[in-house]
Length: 181
Image (cartoon, rainbow, N blue to C red; front, side, top):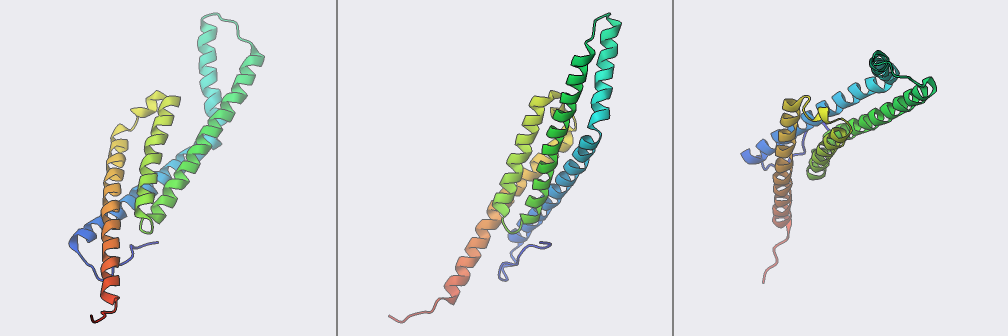
Protein backbone atom coordinates (compact mmCIF):
# COMPACT_ATOMS: atom_id res chain seq x y z
CA UNK A 1 0.00 0.00 0.00
CA UNK A 2 1.60 3.26 -1.13
CA UNK A 3 -0.53 5.85 0.64
CA UNK A 4 -2.49 5.94 3.85
CA UNK A 5 -6.25 5.63 3.61
CA UNK A 6 -8.16 8.86 3.76
CA UNK A 7 -10.20 9.52 6.85
CA UNK A 8 -13.46 10.68 5.39
CA UNK A 9 -12.36 14.23 4.74
CA UNK A 10 -11.03 14.69 8.26
CA UNK A 11 -8.02 16.58 6.97
CA UNK A 12 -6.91 17.57 10.44
CA UNK A 13 -3.40 18.88 10.88
CA UNK A 14 -2.75 16.49 13.78
CA UNK A 15 -3.83 13.46 11.76
CA UNK A 16 -1.69 14.66 8.87
CA UNK A 17 1.31 14.79 11.21
CA UNK A 18 0.54 11.27 12.46
CA UNK A 19 0.29 10.06 8.87
CA UNK A 20 3.68 11.62 8.18
CA UNK A 21 5.12 9.77 11.19
CA UNK A 22 3.65 6.51 9.90
CA UNK A 23 5.25 7.23 6.52
CA UNK A 24 8.56 7.78 8.30
CA UNK A 25 8.03 4.52 10.21
CA UNK A 26 7.38 2.72 6.93
CA UNK A 27 10.59 4.15 5.47
CA UNK A 28 12.56 3.09 8.57
CA UNK A 29 11.09 -0.41 8.42
CA UNK A 30 11.83 -0.77 4.71
CA UNK A 31 15.39 0.49 5.25
CA UNK A 32 16.10 -1.70 8.29
CA UNK A 33 14.45 -4.69 6.61
CA UNK A 34 16.31 -4.31 3.32
CA UNK A 35 19.65 -3.70 5.04
CA UNK A 36 19.11 -6.70 7.32
CA UNK A 37 18.22 -8.95 4.39
CA UNK A 38 21.12 -7.86 2.17
CA UNK A 39 23.82 -8.00 4.86
CA UNK A 40 22.70 -11.34 6.25
CA UNK A 41 22.26 -12.97 2.84
CA UNK A 42 25.89 -11.99 2.23
CA UNK A 43 26.89 -13.59 5.55
CA UNK A 44 25.00 -16.77 4.65
CA UNK A 45 26.71 -16.92 1.25
CA UNK A 46 30.18 -16.13 2.61
CA UNK A 47 29.89 -18.06 5.90
CA UNK A 48 32.52 -20.60 4.96
CA UNK A 49 35.35 -18.17 4.09
CA UNK A 50 34.48 -15.95 7.08
CA UNK A 51 34.55 -18.87 9.52
CA UNK A 52 37.67 -20.37 7.92
CA UNK A 53 39.49 -17.06 8.17
CA UNK A 54 38.65 -16.70 11.86
CA UNK A 55 39.59 -20.29 12.69
CA UNK A 56 42.85 -20.06 10.71
CA UNK A 57 43.77 -16.92 12.65
CA UNK A 58 43.11 -18.69 15.95
CA UNK A 59 45.08 -21.74 14.81
CA UNK A 60 48.10 -19.54 13.95
CA UNK A 61 47.96 -18.05 17.44
CA UNK A 62 47.81 -21.52 19.02
CA UNK A 63 50.70 -22.80 16.89
CA UNK A 64 52.82 -19.82 17.96
CA UNK A 65 52.26 -20.97 21.53
CA UNK A 66 53.47 -24.47 20.52
CA UNK A 67 50.10 -26.05 21.29
CA UNK A 68 49.04 -29.34 19.73
CA UNK A 69 46.03 -29.17 17.45
CA UNK A 70 43.77 -32.10 16.60
CA UNK A 71 42.98 -31.71 12.88
CA UNK A 72 39.84 -33.89 13.11
CA UNK A 73 38.44 -31.80 15.96
CA UNK A 74 39.29 -28.61 14.06
CA UNK A 75 37.45 -29.88 10.98
CA UNK A 76 34.38 -30.84 13.04
CA UNK A 77 34.44 -27.44 14.74
CA UNK A 78 34.80 -25.74 11.35
CA UNK A 79 31.73 -27.47 9.92
CA UNK A 80 29.66 -26.76 13.04
CA UNK A 81 30.68 -23.09 13.06
CA UNK A 82 29.72 -22.73 9.39
CA UNK A 83 26.30 -24.32 10.03
CA UNK A 84 25.66 -22.09 13.06
CA UNK A 85 26.77 -18.99 11.18
CA UNK A 86 24.41 -19.79 8.31
CA UNK A 87 21.54 -20.55 10.70
CA UNK A 88 21.95 -17.36 12.73
CA UNK A 89 22.21 -15.20 9.62
CA UNK A 90 19.34 -17.05 7.95
CA UNK A 91 17.17 -16.18 10.93
CA UNK A 92 18.27 -12.56 10.54
CA UNK A 93 17.16 -12.66 6.88
CA UNK A 94 13.70 -13.76 8.04
CA UNK A 95 13.65 -10.93 10.60
CA UNK A 96 14.49 -8.48 7.82
CA UNK A 97 11.59 -9.81 5.75
CA UNK A 98 9.25 -9.32 8.72
CA UNK A 99 10.39 -5.68 8.97
CA UNK A 100 9.57 -5.19 5.29
CA UNK A 101 6.14 -6.80 5.70
CA UNK A 102 5.44 -4.62 8.75
CA UNK A 103 6.42 -1.58 6.69
CA UNK A 104 3.95 -2.61 4.00
CA UNK A 105 1.19 -3.10 6.61
CA UNK A 106 1.81 0.08 8.64
CA UNK A 107 -1.17 2.00 7.19
CA UNK A 108 -3.58 -0.93 7.31
CA UNK A 109 -2.62 -2.12 10.79
CA UNK A 110 -0.60 0.73 12.30
CA UNK A 111 -0.55 -0.40 15.93
CA UNK A 112 0.26 -4.11 15.39
CA UNK A 113 2.83 -3.32 12.67
CA UNK A 114 4.71 -0.73 14.72
CA UNK A 115 4.60 -2.66 18.00
CA UNK A 116 5.71 -5.87 16.27
CA UNK A 117 8.57 -3.98 14.67
CA UNK A 118 9.67 -2.34 17.90
CA UNK A 119 9.56 -5.60 19.87
CA UNK A 120 11.34 -7.45 17.06
CA UNK A 121 14.03 -4.77 16.82
CA UNK A 122 14.71 -4.74 20.57
CA UNK A 123 14.47 -8.53 20.82
CA UNK A 124 16.81 -9.20 17.93
CA UNK A 125 19.33 -6.64 19.22
CA UNK A 126 19.24 -8.35 22.62
CA UNK A 127 19.55 -11.84 21.14
CA UNK A 128 22.46 -10.88 18.93
CA UNK A 129 23.97 -9.04 21.90
CA UNK A 130 23.95 -12.32 23.82
CA UNK A 131 25.61 -14.12 20.89
CA UNK A 132 28.19 -11.36 20.39
CA UNK A 133 28.18 -8.49 22.93
CA UNK A 134 30.19 -6.27 20.59
CA UNK A 135 27.11 -5.96 18.35
CA UNK A 136 25.43 -3.87 21.04
CA UNK A 137 27.88 -1.00 20.61
CA UNK A 138 28.57 -1.32 16.89
CA UNK A 139 26.47 1.21 15.05
CA UNK A 140 24.97 2.45 18.31
CA UNK A 141 23.97 5.83 16.89
CA UNK A 142 22.01 4.33 14.01
CA UNK A 143 20.44 1.80 16.39
CA UNK A 144 19.44 4.60 18.74
CA UNK A 145 17.92 6.64 15.90
CA UNK A 146 15.96 3.62 14.62
CA UNK A 147 14.77 2.90 18.16
CA UNK A 148 13.60 6.49 18.66
CA UNK A 149 11.90 6.43 15.26
CA UNK A 150 10.09 3.20 16.12
CA UNK A 151 8.99 4.53 19.53
CA UNK A 152 7.58 7.63 17.84
CA UNK A 153 5.92 5.44 15.23
CA UNK A 154 4.16 3.43 17.95
CA UNK A 155 2.92 6.64 19.56
CA UNK A 156 1.75 7.97 16.19
CA UNK A 157 0.08 4.64 15.40
CA UNK A 158 -1.96 4.72 18.60
CA UNK A 159 -3.01 8.32 18.00
CA UNK A 160 -3.70 7.65 14.31
CA UNK A 161 -5.82 4.59 15.11
CA UNK A 162 -7.71 6.45 17.83
CA UNK A 163 -8.51 9.30 15.45
CA UNK A 164 -9.50 6.88 12.71
CA UNK A 165 -11.95 5.12 15.06
CA UNK A 166 -13.35 8.44 16.29
CA UNK A 167 -13.84 9.59 12.71
CA UNK A 168 -15.61 6.34 11.79
CA UNK A 169 -17.91 6.66 14.81
CA UNK A 170 -18.78 10.24 13.85
CA UNK A 171 -19.52 9.10 10.30
CA UNK A 172 -21.81 6.35 11.58
CA UNK A 173 -23.64 8.80 13.83
CA UNK A 174 -24.07 11.22 10.97
CA UNK A 175 -25.60 8.48 8.82
CA UNK A 176 -27.90 7.15 11.54
CA UNK A 177 -31.53 7.99 10.86
CA UNK A 178 -33.10 10.42 13.27
CA UNK A 179 -36.29 9.03 14.71
CA UNK A 180 -38.84 11.44 16.07
CA UNK A 181 -39.90 10.96 19.62
